Length: 542
Ligand code: SF4
Ligand code: SF4
Image (cartoon, rainbow, N blue to C red; front, side):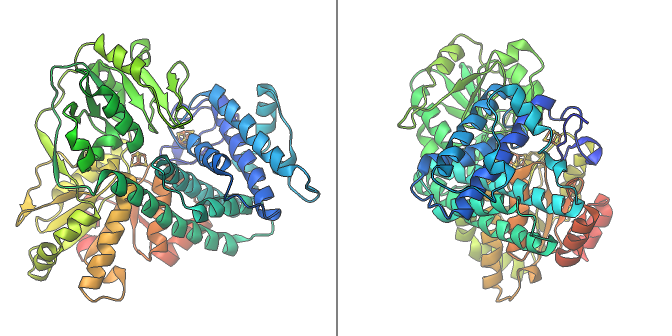
């Protein structure tokens, strides 16, 4: 076995990628990512054991978040940038060690590597499988994957100037705990739930950052056709990057379109002032392999999900920024004030043809918490009057597996007196279907990106209050969540922390759950995998 990774839903055979990632990750990339995580664990052990105050270590805190983000599925395939990041984190770690007696610290806090080959040698002994007990390994990895998602959301919030030191402190605490061999399964289950608690805080922080800077999402019609101008496609989740791109492209004759998870940016009022913000092009992340070909213009990745391009021609139009990276792509770095210079992308766009239409018309979204709560009276009346029988939270991710056709069929077959609440790229499985409305309330309410699942939780908590219920699980809401990568893991842990039970998770249960850990999730939280569409609908409506 040359590598081992089982962090995402598409892991080979549902068990683990061992030769090359299904995502395209090579053995070398996988090993460097493992070593980066190991370095972070050692650094965190120093912070926790030596009680180092990190509240004034702004750059280190930010770089810890970025390092975690770089290891999320489909975020960074660039070995050179991973190597640089390892060296940077080792430097921070070694500065923390100065003057400390490091006796009793683990190897992660003391190991030494300098060259790529030393890194790869080291990585061979510290990966996921180095934890022998499969239950402890399963719990440690679930915590780490939750931290990766949490770090991504926190990094976005930081980029908009919002920080929460409590979240940073928890990330150090939890990373250090994954090195602690005295912690057994019960303690790690408790830490898993605590990770969910901080996941809620991270999503709240990002929500506050986004809405305070760009306004609360509003019901918005988004064009899915094209115009006849040269254009740039922006993908990922980072609204601060989008803001800079729109500022730099306005009045240049170059349009900007969103792809994948950037679609919900259209719902924020602050972006509607840009005439060149033309619409959304295409669908969920995995369709980029075809959709980027017909787009013709440059593509900027602000975060995951990158799929290795099929041709040199497409590769020549790809740019990365932030925590993303791909070999052969130009990476745009922020200057000290946080400004990114996108002039090269804009100049390239001007030399290329406009995008080719692959769809036409529009879609509607913008149902985040403020917008839905503004409609609360209407929604509550529809539930009390029997016009809405049930809500289905179908947040989460899309992916390549054929079995995800389940979610389209599920949406189509739901009775007409039900409403789908969605967030994340899972929406692309049904947001272009004509599912109608109930008394003017659309049957698919899109709150936004995967982190906007926080909005869905707030809506559920508000409905609980409005109906005078003690328990969120007494609401007429069913959770049928699709997952793919580690941001979905933190969303799931956040929902568990908020007390949501009986979540159905698909299209398959995580490969990182050992049989015993899966049993705990089933017994304690009622987590279940999906079955057939008909039997699941029958079960949910029973
Ligand atoms: S991220 Fe997913 S597909 Fe990629 S190597 Fe890991 S488990 Fe495999
Ligand atoms: S919804 Fe899931 S797959 Fe899509 S970008 Fe968010 S975390 Fe990734």
